[in-house]
Length: 209
Picture 1 (cartoon, rainbow, N blue to C red):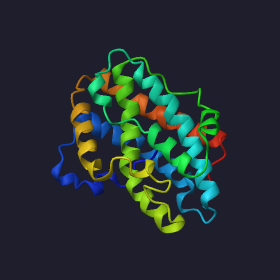
Picture 2: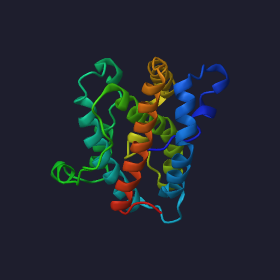
Picture 3: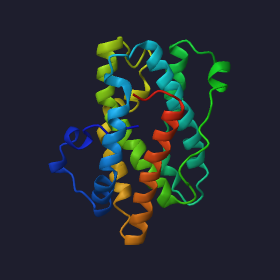
Picture 4: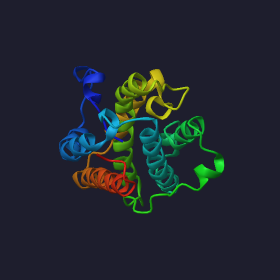
């Protein structure tokens, strides 16, 4: 869950950057960089076993978080269409050898960021959507190092495929509707709490460097 070079990938010179988007980028730059350094994708120790353990940890976080997102009453349901990722993680885990029973028995994260309104949901989604965009970079690393592609255990890292840029831009369009300073602050704080929650979960799962 890390936004890797997303702005470069989408040629930001052609994108209007809303105030809330700029505030999110500035506020999350440090935790983003910190977590990115600790993820094992470019570690010398990365092998198929380590990759599987990482996906198991991701599943425990994404599945629980997406269930919470679905319960936010005032969130526009259309904003979630096609954006859930847990199903892709489940597919990858099956391809890599886990049974449905083993997947169902995986530990879930219970220390999630607060999710009680649409503004908090937007903060969570900013982190998740940015991570999905960055996953395209990670998918190339995993393919080169482990010979894993979208059909052999890497569907999550390239879940949007060629539509990644379009999905990111449509999310930014949704985000740009947040203008009030107090509302922007709620979105930013939610994004920061999402980074904190995810990093703590990965630490507990013992998959970070």
